[in-house]
Length: 327
Image (cartoon, rainbow, N blue to C red; front, side, top):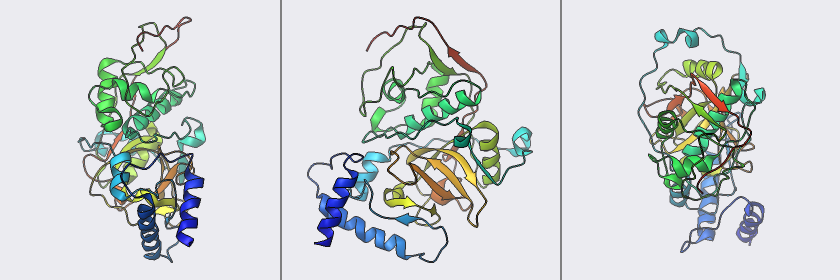
């Protein structure tokens, strides 16, 4: 009876955020497995201060393999090693104890990728939005669907690589249009083309580096340049409710792209502030806190884990009569 009440509670509370369960599976069985997993995760380090809390959320009706197949579709890439000696403008920066680009009003609100495995696109678009705002342009929501439909080196809602998307944006000089002009559909679609006179935002140049064993340098890069694109192992994030993830998070596989917007070293456990794309009902208003140091969730180590967007030139073209083509 208690299990049934919890299952009904999950259905009612999460109905607006969670999609229908995959056909042919047994959601109550998956929910029961989730409850057992929550008990285990919360029992291993119960006395630790600020440790993460796990429990019922919009993903509790999914088996772990279903969760991974739907939501963890980012693909890793290799980056060159970050060399502090050649980036003195970053390495010589003095860091505050706490910093978050969200407080500077240059980060758009958390979005929801729904059942589209397009975390790679959400993260890249989020980084571009912030890069534009940091350079003095108005903060605007740009089109994730445009990247999903048109980035030919990726697989849309079936997965992709943030680095491939950045290469595509830079090489083709694609102008990202506003989200209102090309709204998110949570599925693959035909690429819509816009005329050369249509207003949009393009990048010219970016940098991607491996920050293995250099989380201090990673924090300096974030502070100096803007939010960081990272690809992490997010398997255990299925059950996350809040607190600082310090355990239960391996670094074995890069499978989910997110945006690191800041860090906090004011408490006993320093942590990264990470913006996700699973809606505001997940985690801490759509964000997760991950312990700094120790390569928790693979956020810092291995060649495919980190890159940052360093926009060397920006283009935002305004025209009085933008005209869309295709569709």
